Image 1 (cartoon, one colour):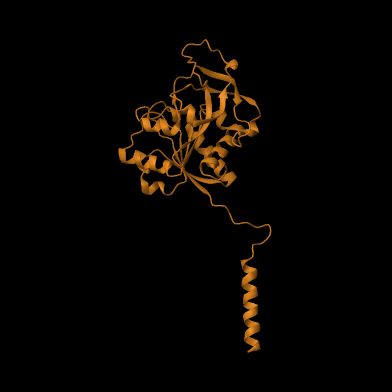
Image 2: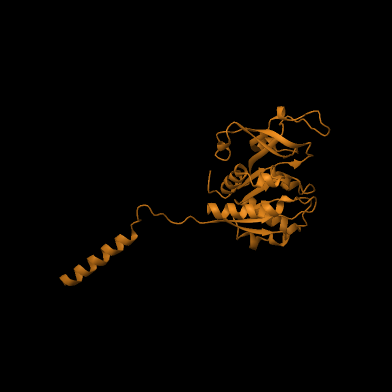
Length: 255
């Protein structure tokens, strides 16, 4: 009888040791899954091809996410979207989604998943008003393509706190129309003193010239950054850091 008690005690001790977490070793964090949509139905940006490589490298180096690149709107089904945590758009024009695909996309974001939009993601779906409620605004001309100063509107945000109070960058600068200012949290904005405001097609609006923002759509998180026209911007470590933080924010790896 004593022999069985000793044997049972040893088995119990082994089980307890196995169940105790080892110091210095944590479980491997689950990688996010990102569906990157790069279909152009308007102007196609030269930097799209480089962007695919850069986003893939960001995911690999950080270990934060895996990427699937597509230009097929057929990927936007409820069943297929179950494989992803977020969608990323570098798109233009009226993407030929069916009403069913649009509904699947809306439900995906609204239910708590994420959307990252870069550059011309706001030059997309002008004829579908729901998209404006998701992304937060529409492209409305780019009078400046030059070196500009970008103000960090919220230096306390982890998404942009590493950039200081402002920074300079050379890129195509968008103006935003129909901006959902009341429901968007602006992170970056153009410093208007760094550009010529008398140029043709300049539109002065009460919210100025927002460059990057976050917003909610239902339970879903949306991050948009209008920079990214130039390949040099995609190669810029500051931009890559912004993208990584934006992707991690929409997938709730960071708050």
